[in-house]
Length: 363
Image (cartoon, rainbow, N blue to C red; front, side, top):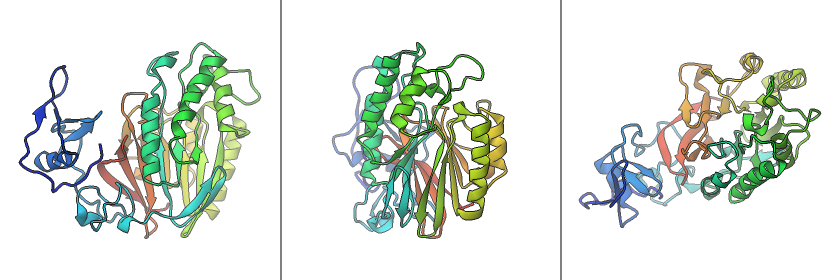
């Protein structure tokens, strides 16, 4: 369900959804009526094609984020009346460029990110959230983003079955085929099925079904890597850290790579699976190295929700575990603005903005 116009029908009465328990839901015959509900109840939220009225945890999105270069979906006053898709840059012009597996060149960055797409329970391959990731990928493509940064966890296999790990990884790859053609993956903890300390997997290590399936899909020599995107305003370096393949070799690689970025990149965007705050941060050495260098954004997942910490890491870290593992479906987009700042927007699985956008300077 796409948001349309917050100036829609004000007096239409919703009809009550019949049957079932749970939150109060209302169905509307006109797709513009959800926007009308936004006017009547600024905390309404769309859930699975219906509307949960007046959810206090979802802020009103019918405002233009101050100083941003994105279109708010709520009314023609913000997009010049051209009917731009949610998130499409002002005047409906999408940043141009060509980004492939190993980087590329763009006018301005315009990319999506999400993480944690797997069954809720171990070895439940028949419960893989195939529809969720396919819808998310489709919504990303509809916004015409240049590429996607994936944040890890694509399977949940505990029985070391190669067939099952390959099947779950295959479900993921099939789902993202509906989205942008360039999709940079990050290794999550479930890409390693080891139950022995240090719970890590390595290219030269013992066979692990999950790791093997992931590396076959990744098609890179190591689970950690970087890509460079040249923008009209300077170099953007994307660093994909493999938390669960951490060793001295990766540590030296990360330190050297970030030192080079400090000297040459305008933007350094780090992707890792574990958050950088809380009790589930993974290897402490990774945090220590990151804090010694410049960073524009630290994109993470692992927690199956959306979080933006404004009290630490210079308000530059976020959790986007919205890929379907925890029942929370969605993603986020990042837009490089004309002034060089980056604007971050959380979105539902259809691409509609949720909550308040926020921006950061390059470094």
